[in-house]
Length: 288
Image (cartoon, rainbow, N blue to C red; front, top):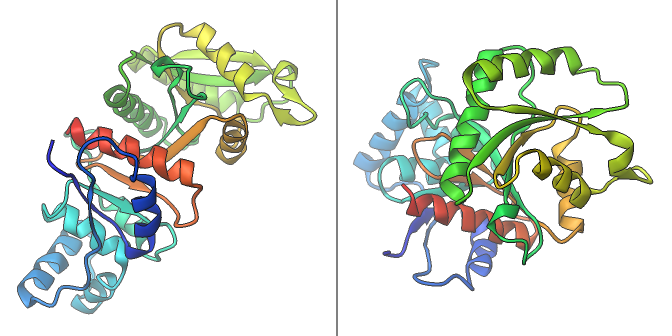
């Protein structure tokens, strides 16, 4: 495989280079595009920016202002076929808008933010799983499409079959129960998703999530599969912290279902998270 070209802001480059130092095979080419000096290229990127605004309009001055943002430039380089993937920084003011500029790769499809976790080394590929934030109940059809997009993306990145799961905690108050039940009913109409109810006192000790035991309980409900979980009652930050404290790996987000491989990382993300996210991004490039 030729050396992959990854577009990213210069602020992410030192951490990215360090994280990829041990990669087997060709090292990535890190591309941190500056504001185009060529007026033709600059005009082309402005047109791309306008096209991806989904009819929101915008003046030439606004397009030029958007191009001042390093994450926007990284994404535009990718969309202009100048790279195979992009890594954006949420520290850049334009990163959120750039993230939304990506379109689904399948007609009528959806994009979703996919996080990936893995148990400590030695657990094998079957230890990998995906995480989707609870998308809410305002648009159940869209929420279902997002979970499907995340599951399809995870299937590209793991050899195991993927099992979409809606996980809840029994034995306590659940303000989301009515909403999550409607979500599950819609999921079951369109996918092979399953509901997993866990008795919460078994998985918390001194107020801390026992992540290994929680994952083992989830896996018992979908043996041999990589769970693609959505957990309305559990905050992602709490879960990721517990997983990393237990020696596990945490990556993402990747923009699941998108036309191009794109991930997002803060410049001060832990080195292990940088390495895991870049490894997932590289795997996504190889399967493009």
